[in-house]
Image (cartoon, rainbow, N blue to C red):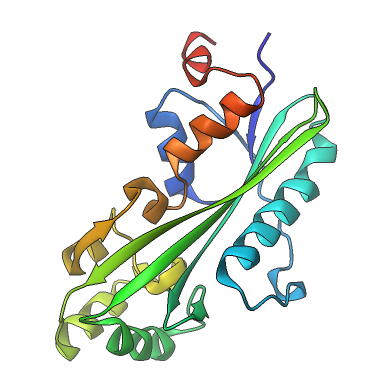
Length: 197
């Protein structure tokens, strides 16, 4: 008997990724205060945040699989989450254009039925296009980059401004499906079993 699958995130993109591969998650955002975490290493930062989000939600679902995720973009080793406002988003894009950033996503999977936790990180390199100030302002005016770690959504209008990626493409959307499949396997589950639910 498979345990219920809980997504400890409000991200519609993460929910869609799971639904697309046959997992219908229970969505329970953690509302974890990210400002509590003071870690400078990008990989450690997203792992700590993902684990904190999953741990916050797990007590509500003691017999479930609870997945917490967190994504950030690192540019020259500097960590960038969601921009605070439009002005910051414009400035960020002026920094990002024509450059390669690293998109880190932390994944924490808590299995309440086995009292086991797996925490991993996936990194994908993103090549940004050499976009004009006018294009940056038009993109920021859509509001899309204000809701995204790294200030862009590759599955949305931001896809216009990404020249290429190296590594896992779903990681850039906020959840590495190959990594999740491996984490489920390490806990003794076959990802395809969720299709039968």
